[in-house]
Image 1 (cartoon, one colour):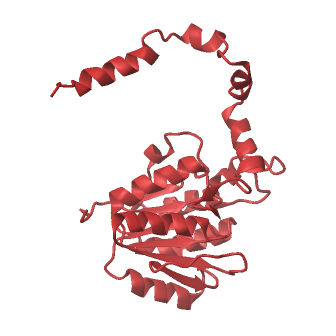
Image 2 (cartoon, one colour):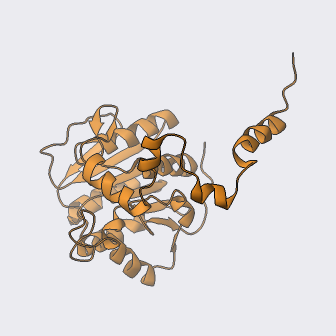
Image 3 (cartoon, helix red, strand yellow):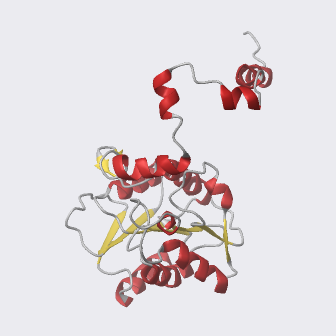
Length: 253
């Protein structure tokens, strides 16, 4: 059998791209296909607005179901789920059920875990799965919080908030559900991007939203920290939204 030096093969592969790299070549030379040169002239800010206006509502699907997610964030979610190995994922806000199906399918791949879906109404939600327990009602309902707490007792828990994006509600959800998050796991606050953009540009809110809630929450909860490595693709909808609980629990993989 012929021996393959994987390390040197990988090095040669990357040298094809990096060997002639220079700042001047990057900034001045057009791409070799005009149509793509024009597309790639788009700024990151312009791309985020384009994605919000043209893509996320109508053209993002998981296995045929609408999933209102930034795909780069969704990729980060699967990394976190694999690393944390949660026994319970709490999803606040499930929409059509596309993201619920995505998380349930990831748990299928792991071969374990329960998904708790909380949504105030289910008029467009269309998904059932043996791993999913659905609660219909406000995430602030004390009865729902109590029942969720029982399901999370002595479990490794991950929370993802994609419900009401007002500051008041997201802060309330942080206070009510962060207590279930296990050391080493995350409370993921989605869509803080609305606090970065301006009202009227398709991404900004007129009032404060999730990012403002996160900033206030962190000021009184030193047990959580922002994991900036989860924003490494830059184009995230969740600025400062990957909140990791300090401490570490060794998961059973």
